[in-house]
Image (tube, rainbow, N blue to C red):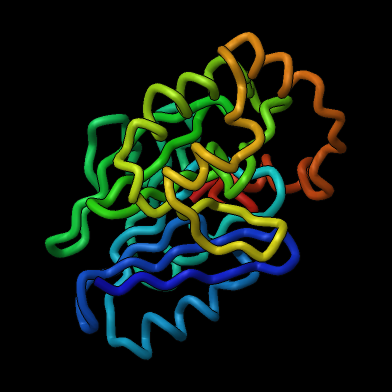
Length: 230
């Protein structure tokens, strides 16, 4: 399997390029508009065909590259059915599978950071969007976020994956690139809570500024990063 992790320094976003093999089909998860040329270079270098570009949720801190990638390659674009946007060609839901060649990514609905947050599971790893971060969890104070929903997504879904499962988030602000479910159970400070109410109180007590690009990024991302729906 080909698995490439790209990092956007402005928004601390991770984008993932996944394919079964060189020369085969590929998908991109959480692409950033300003980095589309970088993705296209890597795809072309390995002679792959981009067939799908996906966002784990509607991001508030960067503009997505979904629309530009679809225009450049003819690939399908996808968001979850809860994203309430008409610009994508595919709406997935929990239980669906994202497919490239013989690879299958299982879709989990993991709301809490936003009400349209999804995670994607491969046999040995999980792409957690902004739900589970490395030594953290996504904030829950805008875009219909809900700490109680996030607790359920974490403790009833993601943390029930095998301990050795690799964790790849959509963001990291401290230079960490990968973790495991076991590490997060042991060392993630936001997971060391007695119950759901304690987690809700913890998250509601955070005092965070809104993302700098939120007023621009959210409406743009509802249109796949384009000026008008595509």
